[in-house]
Every structure is written in structure tokens, then in C-alpha cells.
Image (tube, rainbow, N blue to C red; front, side, top):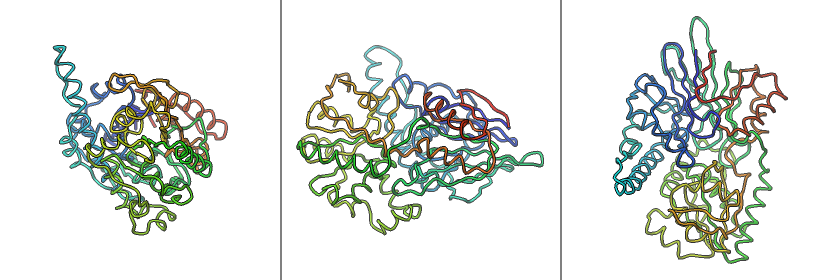
Length: 462
């Protein structure tokens, strides 16, 4: 049995791992590489394996850095099933199509420049139609229901508490009269975050792939985070400004809407207009409303059968580009939630262009910002950013709300690992160098596990 690390090894994006066992080749994740332009160019490189040789894909959740190259994989010849949770399937249906649309638009933009220079034109990485075609391969699995995906390989998904439908993947391999168990944490959520259940505890594994996004830090507690958000509203109101929130369409947006509804009176939110300016986030929110059976007890009781708009009466959905452009005429009393979460594309960039240079504007950063992204530049205090080649002065106040992360911090990761009854071999993935190193030290200090940091192309046998 062999496992090869092809993505999210020594970095956060582009998750991709190849399991070769019991005569089968199973791909865990097939994610898009995100970040700066040079990072994204790597998505066009040939796969380091033959897509036609892959028997099945197992997907932990719908985020594009985990699922985003599946349509490209299908285009390259993969014709097997893609197994994921039912809620993830529903989210992938809208997210992959949206990603295909973005790929088309990015190719059009690049080709205008190439045509002027007499260069060869680029094909989109994949199209919205390619994404629709890829969805025909998806197969839904419920939590805690073992599924035999190959004659000698079973998969069982457990709630990871990261976003709706996110899963810890447990793979049991039957070979040579015995069995081995590979567990992939996927992206683990924080304990106690709104809407979702805490990550499931897994008792046993021979080999564990463990995410480490925040392996070098601990998040603020929920009470401090709520106080921080309330202070942003109070400050923006005193300065008669507006608040821009670059937010991931899936997960973070729904957590924010939940928090705003829950603290509506406490934070004085009746004086604000809320705009959800993202067609993808709107559709994702509707998917969240359809899958309330996987909410935690508190969220299930709070919502009952209601939807997000029912409990936040001054929330308005902004589906069209024309309506989005009208928001640029508003300079106070508005909260605009728009994608993308790292400010690398989408409508948030237009709102930044029209407001970032205003001293009464506020930008609330509510998620992880990868190196090389516009969001990371804002967090790091850049005095200017570039949008469509134009320098924009940063006069708005930037607020980083770290406690809202959908990822487990070091404390949560160690606590989750501590529930294993044996000592599996641990391979750390999905983290930047500093986080990986810090988590490795912390695990070796607290446990007896053998811990390695996965590297691109590394192959292990077990």
C-alpha cells in the first residue's frame, strides 16, 4: 500500500493525494491551487499520474482548494465515481460551475492581452459545461455509513465540522488476509463554532493525514470574537461609514449571517442594511437551509424551519451585476458581504476599488488569507494594493477577526489527535512552513506518534 502526496504538501491549497492499494488507485481530493498568478499557473501543468488510471476520487468537502480540479480531471480522461457527502455534492454542483465560469472569464481576459501581442491563445482550465459534466460522476455518502468503493476498499465519512458536508475520511483496505486503516482529517473545524457539530472523534488509524492550517496558533475564544465584531459595528457607525466583508461563499458567509441574526439587538444591527452580494453565496445559503439536519443542536433550535432571511430582516440578496454596481453609490450604513474570501476575484474587488481609499470605510477580514493574495496584503498592512493594474490607496481601517476561522487551531488539533486509542503514523499536510513546523513540535512534545511533514512528491508505504 502506497500513498503519494501531490498537493497541499508544504502549502495550503491544491489538496491531492494518491492511494495505491489492493489493486486500485484512489485519489483523495483534487483541488485547485490558489494564490498569486504564479501559483495558479501550476494548475495547467500535467498531472503527475495518468487520470485514466484512477479508479475513484474521494472528496472530503466542497471548497475549491479540495474539489476545484475535478472537472479538469474528467476532461483529462478520468471516468470513475467521485464519492462525497450529500451536502458536499449539492455545494459542488454550484461551486464547480461557478469556478468553470470564472475560468472562462479569466481565459477571455488573458486572451485579449495575448491577441494584442500575437501570442497563442489559452483554453480555459475548464468551463461551466465541463463542471456540469463532471457532476454526473458524483455519488453521495451519508455520515457513518461504510461504503465499499472498490472490491477491497471501504470508505466511511465522519463530520469534520468545517463547512456543511465536510468530512473526515476513513479508508479501510483489506489486503493479504488483514486490513489497514488510513484516516484523512480533511479540514477540521473549531470546537463550538456556530451551526455545525464538533469534529467527530476517530478511535483508530494506521496512517493519519492531518491538516495543519493553524498549527502554530490558537484562536481567540468566541466571546472575545463577538466583542471584536461588535466593536467594528460601533466604530463604523460612529464614523458614519460602511463595512466591506470579503467572505468565502460557503461556510464563512453562513456563519456570519447566523451571528448577525443571533446578536441582532445586542449589536444594534437594526440601523444597518445588509447586502449579500454574491450569487454563489446566495445559492450556498439556500443549500445550507436544505440541510438543517446536520446542524448542531443550538442552531437547529434557533432556526427551526426558518431561513437566514427570516431571522435577519434587513438582509437583501444581490444576485445581479447591475444591482451590485448600485451598491457603489452607498457610502454609509451598509454591510456588504461579497466574494472572494481572499480578495483575489469576484465582486469584492469592485467594492474595494470604490471604497478602500475612504477613511470612513471598514474592511472586516474574516478568514484565512494565503500568501500572495490581495487579502493577505491588506492584513499585512500594505499602503496600496493593485486592482486591474491601478494602484489603490488603503485608507480604510482593516479589522482582522481571527476567531471566526473555520479551521481548528493548534489546541483543537492536539485535542482531536488525543482521542486516537493507538499511535498512528502522522503526516502533516495543508499548512504553510511555520504552521507545519510548530504543530510537529507540539505533537512530538505531547504524544509518542511518529510525525512527518509531507513534501510534494513524497511517497510512503504502510
